[in-house]
Every structure is written in structure tokens, then in C-alpha cells.
Amino acid sequence: MNLGHDLTPVAAGGLLDRRLFLKQGLAFSAVVLSADALATAEHMRPESSKTAGEAFSNYGLPSKYERETIRWTVANSNADGNGVAWTPLQDLEGSITPNGLHFERHHNGVPDIDPQQHQLLIHGLVNKALIFNLEQLLQYPMLSRMCFIECGGNSNAGWRTEPIQTKLGYFHGMVSCSEWTGVPLRLLLNEAKLKGRAKWLVAEGADASLMNVSLPLDKALKDCFIALYQNGERIRPENGYPLRLIVPGWEGVVNVKWLRRLHITNRPVMARNETSKYTELMPSGTARQFTFVMEAKSVITKPSFGHKLTRHGLYQISGLAWSGRGKIKAVEVSADGGKTWALAELQTPVLSQCFTRFRIPWQWQGETVILQSRAIDETGYVQPTRAALVAQRGTHGYFHYNAIVSWKIATNGEISHVYA
Image 1: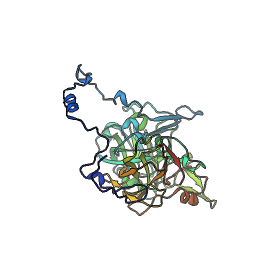
Image 2 (image 1 turned 120 degrees about the vertical axis):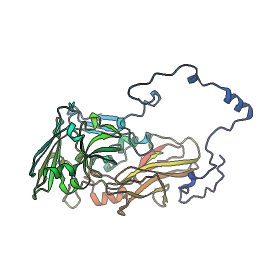
Image 3 (image 1 turned 135 degrees about the vertical axis):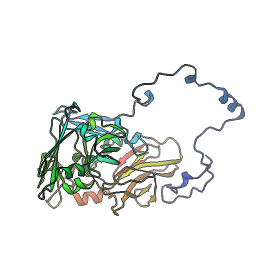
Image 4 (image 1 turned 180 degrees about the horizontal axis):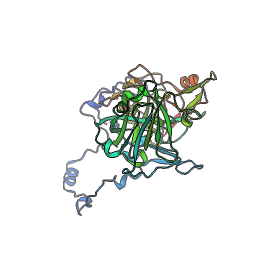
């Protein structure tokens, strides 16, 4: 391998300057052809060019050779349609999740909703109760924004005493990022004319579980919207068709799917998903409740568990970072279990409450290393170590796990999840 550049590490474990890949002249593993081999390659006709191709279709599908890039689904045995489908983060690149791979969390299956019959009701502490059909909502001014949605229970296996050994997406994959398009909620609430006592709204879905959660009006008026489109097409049934409430940066449960009703109140409804769930016992004996914001978090997606390093030399470490409080300011990567850190390159544009892809060059010579990443957001919040998170929150947690994730690379290139 002839790199032609200074490969002096910027941190222990072989981490290199994040700008290295922007330079010219890097050579990885391409085969250098002789003159005879080049002549043969120039005149060789690939099999795919010898017959006519397939006809085009009405809706494009992934290549048949990429069938392993799928969501892993688990249904709870005690209820039909109650379960999870994880996004395979370890198999994806960039920052946008394809619609067909966006994570799902269902409490009683995916409802079959006729858009011609569906309506949205706004009532309660308003001067003018309103009801909208889809045709009316589609005529309102819309906005588009990219943002992540993360289940509050994402990564909860991290609370276990022993590290789970599974692919990244089956551990951290209850988070995805899309461009959502819809009607700003404040337009509809202003039209309903809120009463002075109005402080909260209760959002309810049209699924069989009638999922309902409370949301402070301040947040609803600030940046929430009623989405009708995801990544440019109408939202798919499993992600809330025909209407989904989008609450940027806050836990997934408040992003109510199949939205049918907004009840304006002066207090939270104290529903199941904000009392018996999404409430956690703290070491002091008190409980955390209404912990809406998803704190800064990052994961190295490549390399990660399930991958294997097959050669010594130069690699690119790649991963994702996000924060419910705003933009990612920096991502640092360590190859020695957190003793030293190096800045990663952030893929632009870096957007608020959105996935940010990070990358950094890394030289591996076959030694045992522990790879980590930590996110720092624009508020100055730093992603904590697991030890710090457990010290703060105890061991009875289930939700909002955002500790640093550690991958151990063995001398044979195999990768495992460790606590470091």
C-alpha cells in the first residue's frame, strides 16, 4: 500500500488526521494492471451487457443482491402487532434512512386507514373546535425538515450487567432520520384560538391501542408539525399514514402515528406511557418523568459487531451522532478505550436534531484496540461514559440510555461489544 502521505497518528491506537481522506494520491487495495492485463480488461465484455435488461417498473425496489439489508423484527408474544422493527444502522451510509428501513414500534399492529375517511379533531381548551380532513390539510402551507426520531427505549440493553453481543442495529436501531413534510402545528392551534388556561395537549392515534401522550403547548407551538410526507412520498402505513405528529428532538413515543385527535388541556393526561412507562426510579428514590429530550449520542457503525477486519492497514471509521437539543458541534473518536481522543470529520450540512455522519482515518496494525466515539452538541453537553451514566441514574433504568459505546477489535480482526 503506497499512501504517499504522512501517517503520523494524532491519538493513540492509530487514529489519523481527519482531513487525510480529502488529500489526493491515497491507494487502498486496487489491483495495478500490467499492459497485457489492461488490454484484456479493455476488451472484456461483461455478462450483463450480452442480453437486454429488465423492463422498468412503477415503483423501484432494491437490488436482489442487497436482500440482507433488512429490518430485524421482534413481536411480543402476549399481543398481536406489539413489537419492534430495528433499522440496520450497520449496513447503511449517509444520514437519511430509507423509508422501507425506518424503525417501527407498534402497540397493536398497523391500522388500515382510508384517507378519505380519516379526520383530525382539535378540541378542549379552544374557542373554536375544529375538524380537518386530508384534502383540507393538504391545502395548508407546509414545511420540510430533516430530523431524527428515536424511541426512548433505544439502546436499553446497555443497562444490562453484561454487554450484549449483537449487530449494532439490533441494539441501537430504534432510531432513524428522515425528511418530514407537513403543516406547522401552530397554524392549526392558532386557528382554533387557544384559551388562556391551555398548557398541554393530548395527542391520540387511530390505532387499536388508541396510543395517547401529553405534550407541553410551548413545544407544540415552537416547532412541531403534522407530517403527511416522509422523504418526499406520502408516509407509509407503518410510520403513521396518513398523519403523524413530529416533535423534533423528543422521544419517539410523543411523535404519535395515525394522528386523529389533539385535546387541549391545562394538565398532562397521565396516560400509561407517561406513568407506568417512561418513568424511571432514580438512586435517590425519586422518579424521572417527562424526560422528553433525547440527549446527545453517537455510535460507530463501521467497524462494529458483525464486521471483521481482514487486513492490516488503513481504514475509515464511520458513524452517526445526533442530539435532541440542537446541532452536533463535534465528535471525538478514541482507539485506546477513552484515554486519548481525536476529532472526526463531520459530514455537512450539520443540521439541528438530525443525524450527522462522522468519519476519521485509522491505521490498524493488528493490535488489540477499543474503539469509541463521543458526541458533543452545541449546548456543550458531552456524551457520558457508561460508568458516569450508571452513577447518575442507577441500575433500574430502561429509557434514555445514551452512554459511549465501545467496540473491541481483537488481533484476528473480530469485533465484540465491551464495557470500557
